[in-house]
Length: 158
Image (tube, rainbow, N blue to C red):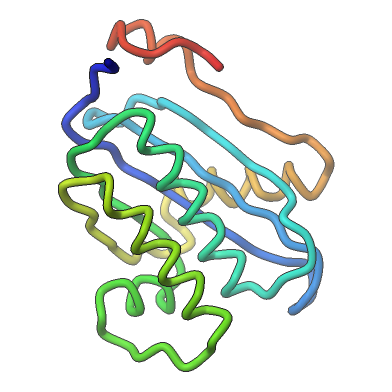
């Protein structure tokens, strides 16, 4: 059985070239002291900006499950996603509604998931934006940072 840490921070970003158009996602997972646990980026095919933002969150939560069953702080520059997930805004788009339900399913493995909007100028949002741009450039990244993994003595690189 895996040993999990108490909480993680998830920074996610999704975007597309044109809207709709080719899409990509970027994900960064940090431990409670901002040590990097994982970074991930990938091209996700033809999509919209909003769907890409949701896809990034879904992938991020899926990856967070490898590190915690406790609390996940989710940070994104998408006001739409944060306001949907916090119940502030109604979901009007059926495509987004299905992605919203995927996120809710991902949440079930955690004790608590907290969503917070941060500006696109936030340093970690800039990092995930750079990651998704790497995916667009054909540099796919899925990396478990071994330094942090060794520190926790719980995880090994994939």
